[in-house]
Length: 379
Figure (cartoon, helix red, strand yellow):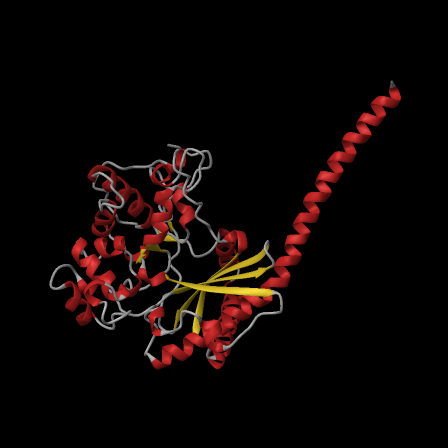
């Protein structure tokens, strides 16, 4: 009996050890594959950026893949390591609405558009909670007063533009709109990501704007939206022209007429997302997402959170403030040292003269992937 019990425990321990070993081996193998494919991914990005520079110089900026840079690796004649294949695609991040500049009118126009199909009350409610989260002096239209201090972990709204779409989970009512009962992003969350950008730039690029952005920012109706789509794709009334891109607001008005607000759009890409996938065989791959901005283009949101109780921005910690009050001489020395370091870094960056600013870099699981739609119900 004792021998059987001993064998049972030994067998159970062996099974658990083998399962853990398999998991550890799988993780290690994935890391090894990622390290092997990462080089080609970043090389592809550098080749792509070099190609974009050439087209940007020739066309006075980047506007659309119709200019010829949609397949940058072939254009540059670059090939990955043997056994690897590389795919590059683009998303015009500046074709979206910059959240930092979104006001109540734009948000309400969007949420009440046919694609969002929200009622006026729900649209206003969502607009109120979003702007109350992002703006210090916003006055809600409805009686919206979320009490975040009563949460399991109390917190205050940052009163600055959203820096990550994961913040939506923390915003009252917005979490009900953008997440399902299991806490997973729903279709509206993905639509919100398609319509808005967390980066700062002046105007959405008309050449990359989707129908939601055309309706909310330009206040274009279905006919105007179709005309813009036809012009860019070279279809419909513009089939004889082939693919086009808008180079100024005058050209846009020539397509949409006097309806809407053409002046609200830019015509050049100020933030571009480069998506690279490196394949090795049928199962191994490495994914890379890089958002870049040309010189004078988009920037990351730099504003700091605001302490609601004090009414001031918190750019540092209490520890730093304490150190400052203890020794003014020490603080002055640290400030001078920091300034010197910053000046040295700025001078080095100027010498490099890199043509793009890297706004974001994501690898593999960091890149959100929209799940495929559920299969249709059986007939």
